Length: 553
Image (cartoon, rainbow, N blue to C red; front, side, top):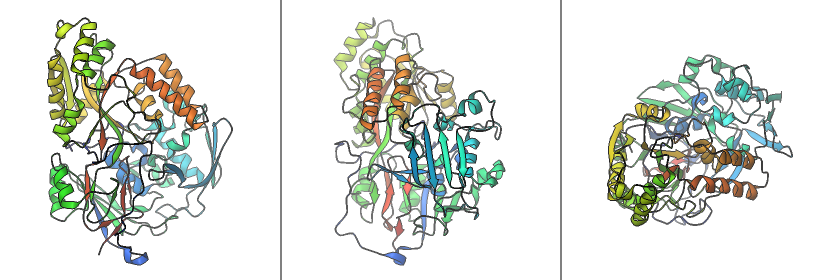
């Protein structure tokens, strides 16, 4: 892993692929070790889980938008819904039940009656309204939230965020203390999946003191912060004894903030951390030394290396407005030229998987081989480049191939550079720090670069809308197609699950026809736990389920 934090929206981190091949539509298969020790009740309780993270951007739901902060925030906040990756089902969280009207424009939620904030205040429907409007409020911080897009379908969003003519989300109404009604601007059958995101939890009245609250958020989840966020050092959370759900076994979690994954791994091997990322080149050693998780997501003593599928894709982002790269044939030739398997083998010890499209396995609607250009064929690449009018690259300029420093990105880009040279495309590598790199992408001041996307929630729309809808902030390729825009909006309103997925697949088909980006590989976890960690589940969206985790004495 590089020394820059991972973002959930523009995903940076390295990960690894489990030894078993991707197969079937189901993401997780339940496994249980027959030899697993059975420990009950109070015997599991106690201990502090020592958890490695990089310095988060935010731990406040206001802008809970990258993996490091989200790992912390998810322990302190419960949203209305939860998604169980093990059963692939939506489950209640802060809501005990809900109703949806016939056209999926009005959602009514009935809240947990006994839920409390960590300061003892009762959790009410008004607290959810406060939290959501806080995300959309452009006046409470000099740094606007980057995650208001989760609420873009809520009535009043446009007036608050785009027009800035309103101070509330008119579609969010607290009917009483325990009943929240949400009205959308159009039918959106997948809205319940959106509400699994931990940023959409409630906030108490104390959140009005933005500066104080952002450093020590008060939530409604199973853990409460101890003190405040000590930047570049640690964040400590303690078990919340008055939690409405199953109270965790561990006493607390120490999120140890370490900038370099290699440093963190050394601390792990010294016995000072319970959960870390595995540095590049160390995956096989970890499997040999610490054992491999049976299913890739659940760690047990002796089965500590997690190599499970992540809901994320690493891709080459291409500026579709560049005078030469605007030619779809050139982009198609680039895609054919890249030997994805070699990248997976050389950089990631053969444990990542070449991407056969944008949508990764585990996302509802994944199809094997969905993108017709997302495979390696050097001859086809040369043929396609000639069709574009550049035989053997004649007449092409030297392109800049940009990337952020840290991790294995330079090695990946060097392999891509070599592959492109074989068909006559010359590139110049350009590395930048993460902040400068993101600015270059946002400004359109690049030609080709690298990015990744990890799902906020397990639906195709989260990939297609975010990366390809005209004008969205994460559409770094500057792709625009009215048919795609219309197709996404239309698919959102289809109530039948199978029909809705098919409609999004049709949108995906339109996108892939012109290869606006080049999918490279699908991520997997590359994490390892200590031998004292039991029943630890690390989800495909990089969120740990700590409620069942316990530590051997």
